[in-house]
Amino acid sequence: MSNKRVDFGNLGGFPLTQDLLLYMQSSYRDAISGMAKVCGYNVIVSGMEDNGTSFSDGWIVLDGELLPFVGGPKQSTFIVVDDHNNEIFEDGVSRTVYFTRYARFGSGGRPITDLFRLSTIGALQTNLTELNNNLTTLNSNYTLHAANKNNPHGVTKQQIGLGNLPNAVSDDPTLNDSNVLATTKATAKASKIVRTGSVEITGSINSSGDDAITNINIAGGVVNGPYLVAGSLRSYSLDYNNDNDVIWMVRDLTSVNFKLLIRKVSKNYVYLMFDYAIILY
Image 1: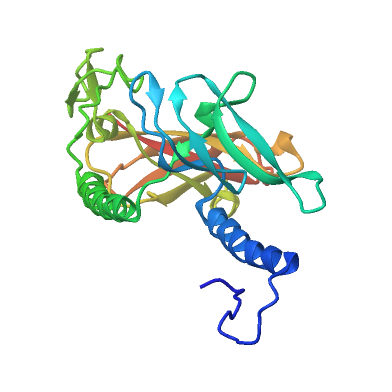
Image 2: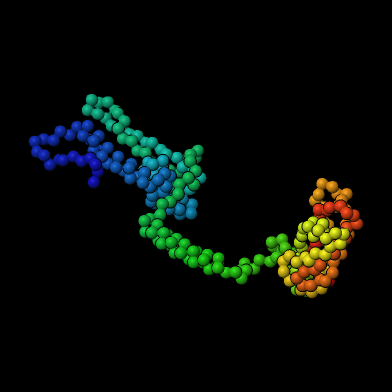
C-alpha cells in the first residue's frame, strides 16, 4: 500500500482536477523510487539477458532511479533517453505532457560494465548457506592443520634458507666432520672448563707469616675426573708494589676442593683475590 491514497467512494460529484492527478502520480512514483533505492545503484533488476550478439529488454536501477532498458544489438556503452510528446489542450495550445525516460545501447554513454546483476532472494539464500558451510569446513581444516606438526606442506630446509646445514648429528665431542652437527651433549663434553671461582686470600696470607696454605672449596660442587687448576692472583690494594711479592702453587686436588700454597717474598701486607678455573684433562 502506498502512503498516499484517494477515496473515490464518496458521492456528490468528485472534483477530478490536475492537482488530484499530480497527487495520484506522486503516490506511486515516490513509492517506486524508495523501493528502487533498496536495490542499490547501477544494477540489473530483471531481464537484459545476453543472447550472444544482443541484449533483451529489462529493468535497471541507475543512480537510484528505476528505468526500463530497451534491448538491442550489444555495444560497449549505454545512454539514457528522455522522450516527450505533446497534447492539444482545450484552449487550442499544444503542450508537452508525456515524458518517457529509458536506457538503451548508445555511443558516448556509460560503460555497460558499470551495471551488475542482482541475484534473486532464493539465490542469495543458497549462496549464504554455501558460504556458511564453506566457513565451517575451513575452520575445521584450519584447526586440524594448526595441530599438524608433521610438516604437512613438505617444506625443505633449502626453502627456508637452511640448505647448508648438515642433516647428521652426533654426541661424540672428538668427531671432526663438517657434515655432522654437534649436539649440546657433545659440546658439553668438549668444554674442558667445568668450574670457575674467586676466593679472597688476604686474611690467610697475612696471618701466617711468609708461607700460607689455604683450603679452596670448588664452586659449583663435585668435579668428575682429573683436572688442573688455572688461576691468577688479583690485587685490590692501592699499593701494587706490596701485592706483587707473592708466588703460589696448588696440591691435594680432590673432587670438591684443593689446597692453595702461597709464599710472600717480602714482609709487606698484601690484598689479594685468587681467581681460578677447573679444567678437565
